[in-house]
Length: 71
View 1 (cartoon, rainbow, N blue to C red):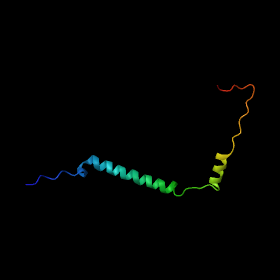
View 2: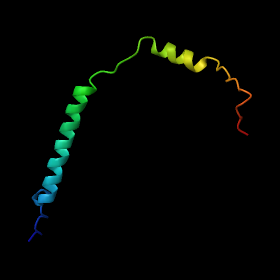
View 3: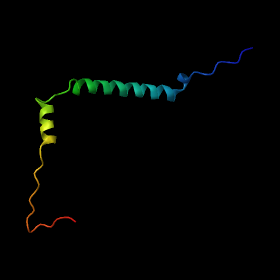
View 4: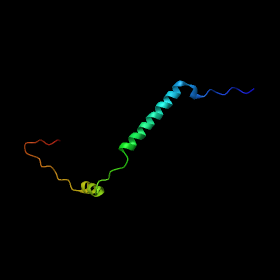
């Protein structure tokens, strides 16, 4: 005589409820992604502007005689 098969986890109501909630959340996230994040926006000459900003020489701030400088 063979041992009885273990009960399916889908027979537990909590497992079914969690699965339904996860599927709903996944569907909502996919809808939000489709609506708001459909295509990336690339600025005109973006890499050139970023490179110019990063490689430009920073001008030092002039300190006034009335201002204290940190030690």
